Image (cartoon, rainbow, N blue to C red; front, side, top):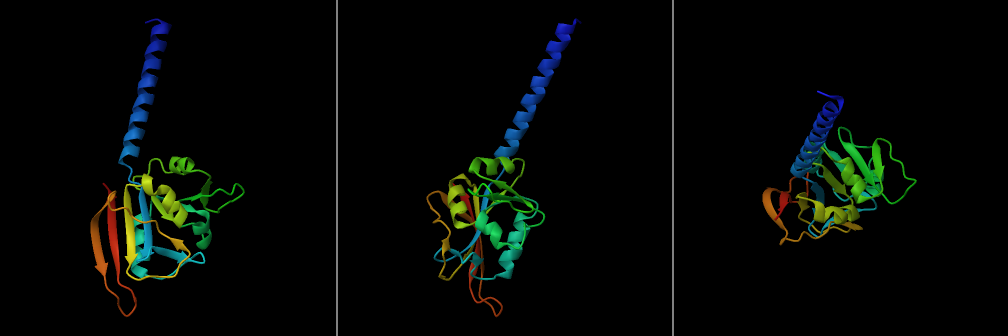
Length: 192
């Protein structure tokens, strides 16, 4: 076999391998479920003064269980409200501030750059705040919502869920107790 034939076969094999990698990456991205996760009041209240309005231990445990091992995308204010980057997660901060740095997190300046960072994750999460939820609502496949059945005063709100586009597929209702003064529900929505 001459050198040109060997080179042509090797190039063909290289292209075939590159095509296979592209197919695998596309299949992996196609099976990725971009999930928006939030806790919101009956009036869609999320927070006030860059802090949570309530403290529901079961909600925090659920958040940790669902997001551990995955990428999480958040806005700058959400990141700044936390004591540090969340452990056992790939923390991604989306901000327009070009000079912003975040210890333990990757800082990006566009939705596309954020989405590039989550490639290969089977279930990346959008964790807030309100503007970030609005930016990603149309791109998400699932919503994991803790609905706190009470109206709260807030300065950040969760976007309305359009029930012509989203279908409730699971719900667990939890009633107020001595430790927790609010009824709340864990609700899963999937895009129709």
